Length: 265
Image (cartoon, rainbow, N blue to C red):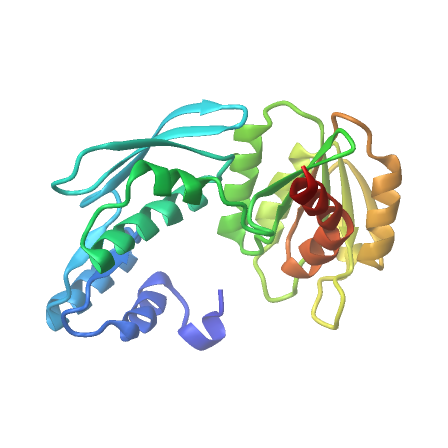
């Protein structure tokens, strides 16, 4: 993403990102492969302590239940910390591990299970956000790059295996969307595509032409949402993704009521 500014290829992007490193200040990363080699070279030149997820510290899923995971976090010299999380995607688990290690380096002590569990149960708006609405399940995720959309497809299948899926999708024209969209629409029983608000969008008619199976095209996200809400039934699974400009209206339409019930419950 943003290759017009950062340059094309993992090495160039990693080199640009490494520009933030400061001499002696620790770096915590989940990078691998070519990107990690660039960071390692830069870290050596600045004498930066480097902590790599999966090499120097670890977060390991141990058990998955309908409501969340049991995971283990292990850092050098510390004892294993086992705690439960909500229904997190794998990228969210990795982010939690990075945050836990950064917390320890900043404060000089490892976070306890209670803190890790609280963090692991937080809901990030529009980031694999699972909302129950009138008996149906909605997954709201602002994924908009090829890699994040492919990862999202795997996470949806992991948490909701075999459930009939309705996909609501819109995307900006500067994203690599075709392969991931094909994967998502082939998994969906029906696909609804929309024109995103604003000028930067892939036209819904182009998305419809690339979709698999049953497809409907809409010019306005709000109209698509109202029609979908009228059709959705108890037990249905709906995935809204491709852009935060689509997830935002969806969350405003169904998320506010859910949040209000949570506060009053």
